Length: 248
Image (cartoon, rainbow, N blue to C red; front, top):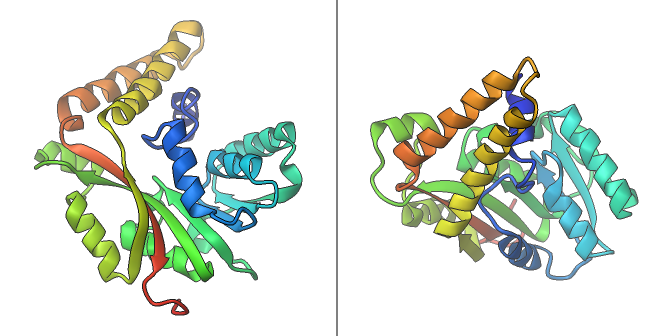
């Protein structure tokens, strides 16, 4: 079973692929689409859960999503049809970094997907290319709540602390207009959901040829979380506006 399939199983019970609960997602979107008639783009949309929730809550919003997973996009189209928002959602199967659109967007999302662009600042640079005047960017990024172990850095990446993360964003020409730091409950709920979903799938499909692999992956990831990064890693979601309006 490949990484994409493993990820899909892991997120079956937590379709927002980030440590955010439903209330946090709703509040972030309220700040991201304050008018309710915006054009929204999600770079690295996966199953397009952010877009589906936005379209459902705001009947005048139109949205586009970009992802490399054909299966995730197929499921997103099916979900959009079930929810009655398919006519307002356009999905693109390609690398997010390669996507180009003739029209700009009022909100550009990339929550938990900065790895696709090579980090936080390259993701913001990509988002800026798509942003309409007066538009906003919503980005989600990890940070270190306290000094991490070398093993944690090797496992998750070379993040910095929260204050320096925000400083980097500001120095890059952005002004935070809203933010949310994931709570301990959100962080723990996310990890339990992911590795619990994997373990449950393996228990429910004992005869599947990949059951042992999935079970071992669930156990390994749960152990890494509990023993390597649970006490040091955090996650921040920011809604940003360009500090110099009109400069792209």
